[in-house]
Image (tube, rainbow, N blue to C red):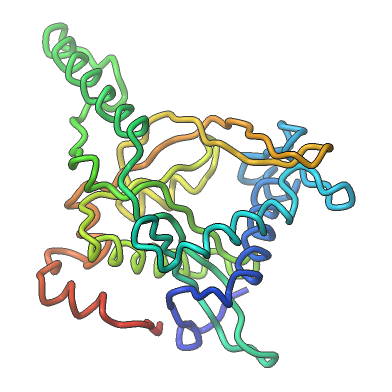
Length: 273
């Protein structure tokens, strides 16, 4: 399904959006990772982890209630300067009223120590491999480039993006990730990280948006057990980094990230496309 960009508004989420965002997040996540037709085409099925498969009757696995719990907690931090939660939504007008069809969200917090250490170790590993390659004259590693790693406190931690299955591949994701990048730049970050499941085709989108330097990581997935307690299953994933120059290009395009443009773009509440 496609729609005109004249009808789409990119805006900051409000607490009143909590219920709609939880339901959209669940619907988009289920369609991408548990819908057999979709995963047969694009891979990354999470049905290989039986404990994660949602069962709404029993309220187990990654059920709707786990998404509601997440969003209830997250939205309480929208205005919390110490643990600021950022969320931008794509909204359209329909005959029955306004509807959110996508979002980009994350915490405006520095990269966690364990995540930063992964990148630091990867840089050391690549430096050693480059020396070996120079000595033997052969390529023994797919990617040996040095990672342009800003200071830990200048890298915004993990974030994610989802769109309504009916509006996939309509350009909404690009608008959302661009607006999110503008916001983290405004807050003083000079790098940004996100993660995705190792077999998720979203890697193509992240690369197209300037994301680079994919390295292995574990992604914790919360699920509900039959006794109603919560547990975590770690899934093989990849971390993707935007260094300072890449983040600047994503947020503002080319060399346009001047102080004047930064202020002009980030002060606007809503953006229409």
